[in-house]
Each structure stands twice: as structure tokens, then as C-alpha cells.
Image (cartoon, rainbow, N blue to C red; front, side):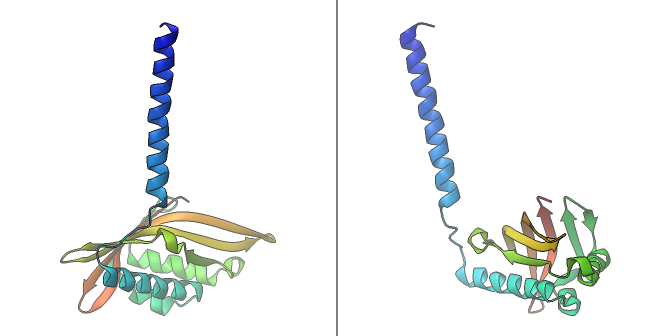
Length: 164
């Protein structure tokens, strides 16, 4: 390839890479705009109800927030149903070594999408923190909750938790 063609190729390739990086950066910094603000607010509230119960070790409330046929997909632990999911929460709540474990939603990552005739899909990133051997351990993971609205109640029917 002669010098002129090589220079043109390098400039063209660099330009494409710059456009892709700019587009990717823009996509990551664009704030999510919900299609239904009221639904967004409702699901954000339900998320806070769930994780206030989690952070306060309130298994009774946690039990009310999942459908009896919930499926919880976790890339670190596999798939569990209702009973195993509640047993998992109970084990976490009783674990003295994880007494300070808490979950916090990274609010700027929250996205909520309506699912007509069913409920909503919630996606986001959350942070779990606890102390281990005197050091604070932080885990940041992505999640998807499929919320079902039935009989006047919002409950989680499916959970996908990744990044463990």
C-alpha cells in the first residue's frame, strides 16, 4: 500500500473508531427517560420496599414481594424457586459474619419498562457492601426484575442477577 493510501486508511479507521467511541460514550451518559413516569415511580418505590426489607433483615416482608412461582437466576448460584430463594434470604439474614450486608441501588442506572397486560421490567445496577476481616467489601452487579401486577399487588416473578 502506498503512503497516500495508507494515510487515508489510517485517518478513515481512526475516524470510525472516534465516532464509535463518541456514540458509546453518549449512549452511556444519556439519562433514561421512562415511557411511563408513574410506573417508573411505582417500581422505584417497590424496589425500595424490597431492599429496605433486605437491609433490615425482614424476611416476612421479603416473602410478600415474590410470586409463589418466582424464578431467581443468579450467575453465581444458579436457578432457585420461591422456597430456596426465601431460604437463601433467611441464611443471609442469620449469618453473623454478614450482619452489616446491605444493598443500595445505583439510582442513576434504574430503568423501568412497561409490559402491557402483565406488569413491568426493572433493570439496573446495585451495590452490595459488607465488612470482611476488617475490610469493606463492595460488589457491583446488574439485575433485572420482572414485576407482575395482579390483584392490586406488585410482586417479582423473575429475577436475573449477574456480575458475581
